[in-house]
Image (cartoon, rainbow, N blue to C red):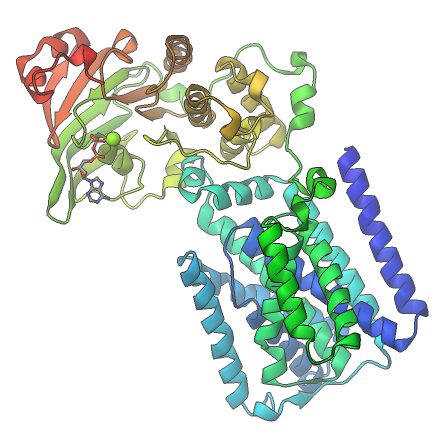
Length: 579
Ligand code: ADP
Ligand code: MG
């Protein structure tokens, strides 16, 4: 709360100073204010997709140019007043960013960045050839009477952009963005609709860039394709974000203000060398401080993402219900004899490799099935298909009686299939509590119930003491435990554990067993993959042994252990000691 108040005061102060300068200063200073506020708006907007969502773009200037031209044409041909034209430009950019984002955001890393670069160039070429835009000569725009009005508008826009990211960083959406940036696959497994989250971030980012472009056009009174789609705008924006602190709320603001003031000061003294000096300074900064100014000790606590739910954690425990109330969706199936999951003839080929050669597997509500087998048997591949991370080459998967075909992983996560990964996939920037909260929020629409459910899960897995720690500071066993807690927070009907207990101490295994037993009492069916049986045998009713993509034995764990075929599969070693 204190942090929010401090940020609010900083934002109000910056806005107040900006508006006061716009109203009182001379034209030169007001122009400087305009370019600084524009820089902040563009940096904050770029940071939404490039920093907070983790999709670095080299082409957000496409939306700056689109906004500039859309507003100009709206004023020229539709005779709209400029505030309305600006609003129209923002809407147009956001609406066109939706389908564009759907396509472009399938790319990742450098491919997305370059794709966006290409998009900006394509738009520039189109604008260059159209008659209505004035072609390469550009077009003049009904200009403002003086710089004060546009400077004020730009300050208000910048303040709005900052307020938007402040709100996002404290919201469920912000939590999902952070998870997406850290690990998109784990985010999907926690029920996050990653495609949607990143497209929303892309649209917001496009809207801010377009707003900047629209007010820019009004301010200069003239636009042409080279200035509206200038690569230097993009480059400067990226540099500002990197200098300030990518992915943070205040880094881009800091970077935007400092770099635009610095570049003006440099320009006054060294007009010809300005760009070179600026480039060298930014390079030095990047080498000395890869995290930007945000990584300076004086800024660090303030520029870090505010931790969500910290207040809820400190709320009196009496607010938390004593017993975990099970998900309503488990109840109908509970103690019903019908399998929750039924796979028939499931097969998967990777080119010439047959990972799974057609297996049948079924599990009932409240049942724990152990799946064991040597390395390469196809166990993880089986989980990838059940949780829709990969499509089967053949066979059928039925979940609660419905065939799963073309389901998205996040949908299954929300509707009752939770999983862990053989190699840990945790979110480095999410606290233990936030990690569990992220999954709980996929299940509960009301934030309060998500928080409550996350607290109950933390208590059940004895992670409450670590709630505010980050995963990389936890011992390996507790990291695995956190992954199990995240899966349990989805209140699944079917829980898939992929060697979840590997590397745990005996005490930790006992704790997991207790949590799993509690889950089965609520009707959750569990399939637990273990490389060796002892970690799971005490609580499993049945075991199914895979080898070479086929089921080679099935039955009560004790019987399976003694089966000669199984011993043979483990190369004659005693299963109990294979590790
Ligand atoms: P397990 O989990 O039982 O150790 P996996 O399911 O990971 O086994 O792998 C089964 C087989 O499929 C192995 O031979 C593995 O090399 C192969 N495999 C798994 N994933 C892929 C992939 N993405 N591409 C090619 N081969 C794969
Ligand atoms: Mg595996």
